Image 1 (cartoon, rainbow, N blue to C red):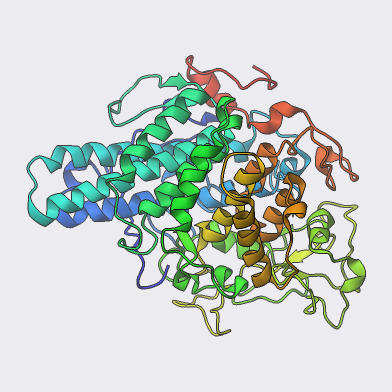
Image 2: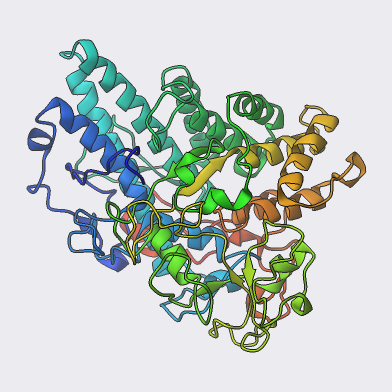
Amino acid sequence: MKESKIIYTVVLFVSILLGGCVNDLDVSPIDPDVNTPNNVFDSEEAYKEALAKLYASYALSGQLGNGGGDPDISGIDEGFGNYIRQYWSLQQLSTDEAIMAWDDATIKNFHWQTWAPNDTFIAAMYSRIFYTVTISNEFIRNVDAAIGDASGTFKTDLEAYKEEARFIRAFSYWHAIDMFGNVPFVTEEDLPGAFFPERILRADLFDYIETELLDIESKITAVGNNEYARADQGAVWMLLAKLYLNAEVYTGTERNSDALTYVEKIIGGGYSLEPVYENLFRADNNLSNEIIFPIAFDGQNTQQYGGMTFLLHASVGGDMPLNGIDGGWGGIRAIQDMVEKFGVSESDFSTADPEFTAITDKRGMFYYDPASWEWDITNVGTFTQGIGVTKFKNISSDGGEAPNAHPTFVSTDLPVFRLGDAYLMYAEIVVRGGGGDMGTAVGYVNELRTRAGVGSITAADMDLDFLLDERSRELYWEGHRRTDLIRFGEFTDGTEHWEWKGNVQSGVATDAYRDLFPIPSNDLNANPNLEQNDGYPQ
């Protein structure tokens, strides 16, 4: 987050979390006497500050920053329980793109795909999703109560804020439908209090998210007319495209032609590819016209040991370059299955050039010193077994210091949605028979490959196997891989058996029911309306 970004004012208004959420972590709501609607929404400015809290729920996990002290949800360490930290971990560590060396609780189970319903990390992700949903509901209720008496600019602002809050709620409900399937469901119509939230089926939640987004589309701020890091029409289009592209997974019915409609809106929406790929992942990436919707971070104003601070520090260890941070935590790295998709092998790296600067595909930003690292992972807990990733950096595109630089906390934003992904989505829709033009699809893919410095493809090369690999080359470590592998039928029982999948070094298939995470045990026990996902112990 730079000066142009929305300021993350830490305001907490009353938010009664879903009954029984994640009791194994002793999760409970923050004391509602600290802040209530009466003293939070006490001025016109307070509504924007409260809206900022909704956005901040992805980047921060508490009220004070600086690593903790006043958490949103008691019982979860603020850094550990950070929304983006958990989302990234569940989306990436469970795939062929990343593996964790740490022994924190059950963290290794994600790459092994051996998690259980009482998993602490799954419970943390689940609770963050529904915390964001709940404070969004509360915000919408308060805006609805105020808007009738508002006039002029204030009324216009409230109307805009409400649509952004609805988008944020839909965005988190998308995470719920993608990760957990059939979940508790509440809206602003369900007043806070002691009740058991009803369970909504995955297909019905799909319909709700779709209906919400279609209504928001014409009401939210137009593309390019909102402050940086706030949702606009482009973010709505991209979320609709994502929803439709994965519709067969979520509902059993493909909606690729609908996905095409919104991908084409994005491509025609005024965005442009960032000329230099690596600048998308540096500390001044807010300057890029490719990014459609980011989660913003700032070294001075979003200080917490989650989010991008976690991602940059945890991916650095050994003799890797620090790239603007004050030290590495030696946790996450890539496995050979991903790196070899870039056409490189162990012999390409040397002690003199451990970053293999001559790599053809400039999207591949890796570190491997054969004098001190091992290509094969025989011990998952040894960070220097595997290949380091240097994709994200806390330095500016000119090599200088990050904006609002801090030695620990980073200023690099997470590009949640960007145009390069839309190009690949267009190509996938064409290959899946959802419409579009093959020549156009080939052109989009080749624009990405030209930027990367690799050769062009032809229509004969364009099939689903190629696209799944190309999505990894273009989007690795950006939080898409688990969803992609499931859509392509390769997450669990497909033919992709990467290193240590199934807790076997050579990799094995796992049970298909793991395409969904389990409903956390204690929420299941606390709410009689819920049912466990198939395959997991009831």
